[in-house]
Image (cartoon, rainbow, N blue to C red; front, side, top):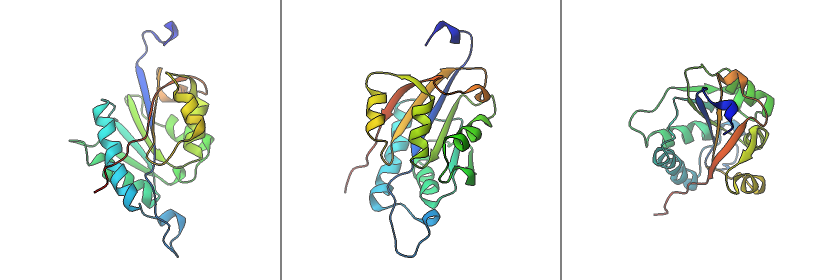
Amino acid sequence: MSARGEGRPLRRLVVLRHAKSAWPAGVADHERPLSPRGRRDAPAAGRALAEADCLPDLALCSTARRARQTWDLASSQWGTPPPVRFDRRLYAADVPALLTAVRETPPEVGTLLLIGHNPGLEELVLDLAGDGLDDTLDRLRVKFPTSALAVLAWHGAGWRALAPGAALLTDLTVPRGAKH
C-alpha cells in the first residue's frame, strides 16, 4: 500500500458469491435453494476464510434463499459467527446499490463480508480494485464463479470513503467442498 494509507486502519471487504444453486421448476428466482454442490462448497468457503485469518466483523447478505443458505453453511465453520444483516437491496443489485450498502457499514467494522450475486459482485470488485496482487485481477476478469471469494484491502478512515480504484485485490479463491 502507498504511504497515503499510513496511520489509517486497514479495511477489508470480503466478497463472496453465493454457492451453486438449484433450478427447481416452479420456484421463483429469489427462493431458489443451493444445489448439492453448493451445499458442499459453502462450508469450504467458510473454512477458507478461517484459514486465511479473514473472518468478518459483520456480514451483509442478500435475502435470496441461496445467499442465506451460503451464509448459514459458511459461518457454521467458525466458532462464533459475527452479526449478519440480511438486506433485500443486495438481491440482483448493481454496483451503485452494492456500494451504497457497503458505505453504510459502521466505522468500527474492520472486515466486512458481502454475500450476493453476479454480475453485480464481480463488477463491484473490478470497480473497487485499483490493482491486484499477482494475477488476481486477470483471473477475476475471466470468471467470478459461484463460491468465489475476493478480498479487497485499503487504508481508510471509514467505509463511506470507499471509492472506485481505492482498494487492492489481495486474494481471489474458489473454495470447493470434497465430493463424498
